[in-house]
Image (tube, rainbow, N blue to C red; front, side, top):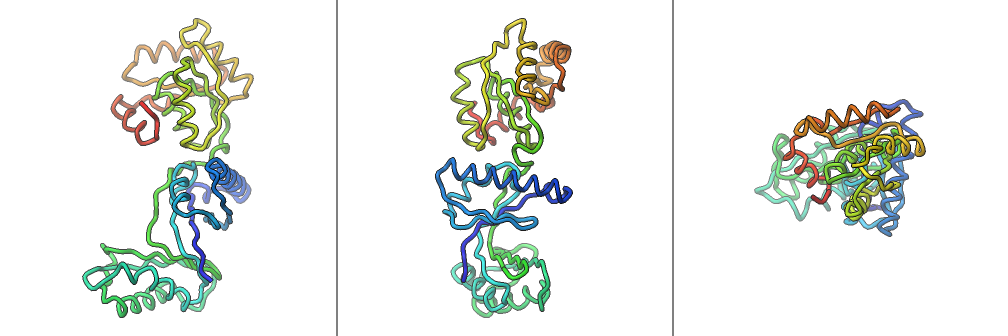
Length: 303
């Protein structure tokens, strides 16, 4: 029996110890389920080492959601079948018969995990020869018009034709809590870089007009955050931030200072550092205004 699934891949998690990796995977699965719950889409999640599989879900909607979940490096809509080469061959023909023709070239990329009576090269040669006979297409390993990926993992096989890039990073909630002061769209970008590294965020904002942008930003990235009103022009500004840090047990403060506003940045940073018991993070410090604008557009942050 063949099933449609979505394969999710993560990167840095696989480098961790078994205990840490398990924790990270648990948090990633939690975040995936929360994203689907927020969109009112059913899903079942299954994990294996190095892979997460989505089943019993709406594939097109899943493909739209998953690139916005931190920790996912790439994803592929795939067809799952057995590791029997006859079954693999049937699915391969199904995926190529309406795509390949005589003037097209193709390549088969095979990976294998587990013990089987064949090698990855055996699979590529057999399936490749069958596709050539059926379509008259030519094999071109370096620059093909079409690629067919086959992952054989123990008793199951997964066949797919694309790898969709995810946002990468680490799962939200795995790296502590950061207070981000939101004064402008660039402030949300500063918060995004900490979220990308797995940090939960608490937001302090001094403009009511920021609320709509903040809500849109959090919704887009399937994140939750407590929001505190604060007056950034107050002489007591740094002490106000410190109180929130203490109350919410934050590990650092994120600000949107840059070298392009060096005099303001140096003065404000000095005051913040003087009154803060936690580090002050400035993820945008080396970025130009144009770079910040481009990154905001890429991250779904309204300017």
